[in-house]
Image (cartoon, rainbow, N blue to C red; front, side, top):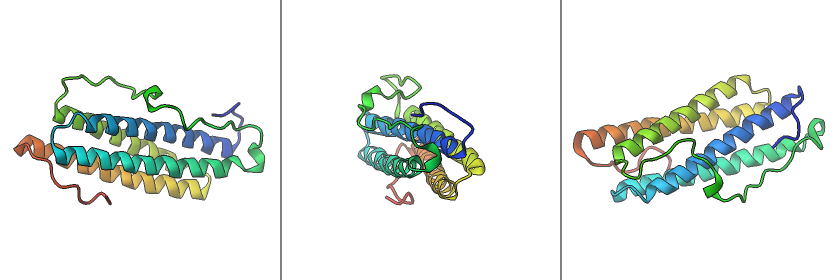
Length: 171
């Protein structure tokens, strides 16, 4: 969290990373929670694997944030984030009906991945730090793969009720 925001490109990049970390933690909570509600073993496996990828995103973003926080121009202005915060304290930003179908859960996952992809694409174009720009680009590519993969899963379920094997996502 930033103590105060001044017109500083490093602080601006840290703010972008803070939002990205929050989004990825929300996605982690969502996939972890929904993996227990999906009946298909393949679907459960896919959501668990997506959760693991979100953990990787959080770690990578957190590392980048820590590196930027060491920059001379922001010393004393950046406060650490409590990454040990319980996931139950992180808001998903939407309610999930306890009777939601697998197709409805996939729709929420698709919307979440699209939102993340759009965020990374937008912030990547204004990133002033080359390492942040590269990181945002890489994660945007991964979110796009998740988004496309989940859309294909939803089509499969709609057409035949079956989940596909988790291939093509780097898991």
